[in-house]
Image (cartoon, rainbow over all chains, first blue to last red; front, top):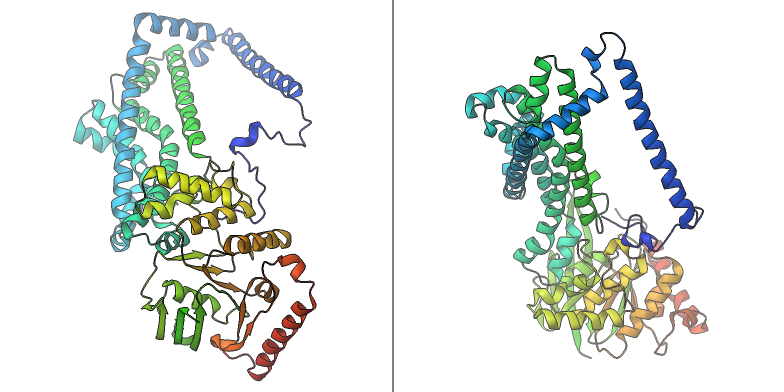
Length: 291
Length: 260
C-alpha cells in the first residue's frame, strides 16, 4: 500500500492525465489524432481482408460445409433478427449471466465477510474450499442437471458457483490483508473496534471484493454458456450446439458472432467498474487475486 | 515545572525466538508541559518502544507511565501520533482523511468539514482536498498526516521519525513547518529521531539514549526561538552542543561494547 518515496504528484493513470501530457511523447494532439485514425484504418482493413478471404475460400468446392461464408452468416443474422430468434436467445443468456453473477457476487462477499475475520474457522475450511475451487466447474454441470433440471436454474447456479469462488477469495484476502498500521492509526485516534471495522477493514475488504467482482464478470457468461451447451433448449449456447448438431455451419458462426459481441460488451463493463475504483487503487488487483 | 508525562522506572522486555530481550531497562523521564523534547539514539536503543508506551500502544513490563496524572492504559484522544510511515486511508481523499478523528468524536458533518478545511489551509494543502493519498507527493502526504493529527487538538504530540523518509530539503521544510505549527500552541511534543542535528534544531531539550534506553545525556538546548532549522545549524553554539552529544554517545558505546 506504500507510495514510493518520492513519487511524483502526477501518478500514472490518475485523474490528471488529461492535463498532464507526458513531455516525452512528441507533444501535440494533431499527431495523436492522426495516429489514431491510422490505427482504426488498419483495423478496418484487416477486418475487410479477413472477410474477403473467407468469402473467397468459401467458393472452393465443399468448403462451405466447414467454414460457411460471410454472406450466408450475415443472411442468417438478418433472419434471426427478423424472426425474433436472436432477441429471444440473447435475453435468456443475459438473464442467466446476470442472475448468476449477482447471486454469486453477493454470496461471495457475504461469505467472505463472515469467514474472513475468523482465522480458526478459515483455517479449518481452507483445504475444503481450495478443493471445491479446484474442481473444473464444467464438471459440475451434470450434477446440477440432476439437482435442478435442465431449466434456467441449472445455468444460473453454474454461473453463480464460478463467480462465487472468485469473489469469495478476493473478499477473504481483503479482510485479512488489512494493513495493521492503518488499524493502529485509527486505534490511536481513539477509534473503537467498531470504528476500526467500518473505517478500515470494511472499505479495504470491499475494494478487494470489487476487484473480484470485476474479474468475475466474464466468468458469469462462461458459466451460463457452458450450461447451455451441455443441456438446453434455449440461449446462445443452445443456438451454437443445435446448429452444430444439424451441420448448419452458418448457424454456428452466426451464434458465435452474437456471443462475441455479448462478451465484448461485458468486458467493457469491466472497464467501467475499473475506472470508477482505480483512482485511489494501487495494484490491488495484483496482490489480491486468488492464489 | 509541571510534568505532563511522567515515566517512572519503566522496563520492557520482548520475547524473540524464546529468548528474552530487554528493550528498555528502568528508564525514568519527565516531560514538561508545553515543551519540545527530542529523544535521540541509535536504532535499537528502545526509543520507539518508549514512544509506543507513552501512546498506550504497548504496556510496560514494569514501571509506570502517567499522562497528566493518570496512568496510561491505552490510546487516548488527547494524544496525537505520527509515524514515519504514512497511514492515510487510501480510499479517502485528503479532506475525508483529515476528518477521521472528528468522525470518531461524533462531530456533525458541517462542523467537521469546516474544521478540516481550516487545517488543510494551515498545513498548506489548499486545493488538494479532493486528492487521494496515492496522488500526493511524499511531502504533501506528510502535511495531510499533520493536519489529521492536529485536527483533534491533542495536547501531547508523539512523533516517531516523522520526516526520515523525506529527502534532505523537504525534511528541513517540514521541520520548519512543524515548528511554525507548534510555536505558541502550548502543546507538548515528544519527537523521536536518530538524527542528532534534527533533534538539536527542533528541541528545547534533547535526551540521548544508549543501550536499553539508558539515558546517556539530557541536555537543555539554549537556542533562541523562533528558530529556522537551516540557519540555526550554522551557529557555533549548535556545533558545540552537537559535539558534546556525540561525545556522550561515543563514550557510552565504548563503555558498553555491543550488548546482545
